[in-house]
Length: 64
Image (cartoon, rainbow, N blue to C red; front, side, top):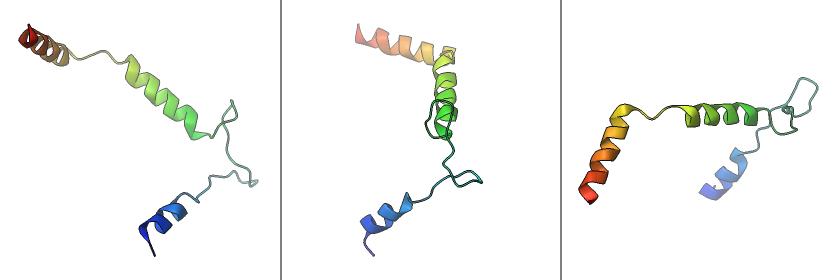
């Protein structure tokens, strides 16, 4: 079996509800997309750590 053939079969899994239909979120997309969006939004909203700000400032000072 070729590597491409194995990979092609790897995405055949489906998440379904007990009734046999696909699980969907409120907007009609797959259920996992709302969780992924919440995770992304939480990461974007996190403040930049002071140590990282200090590092960026040091890098900026070296360019001048």
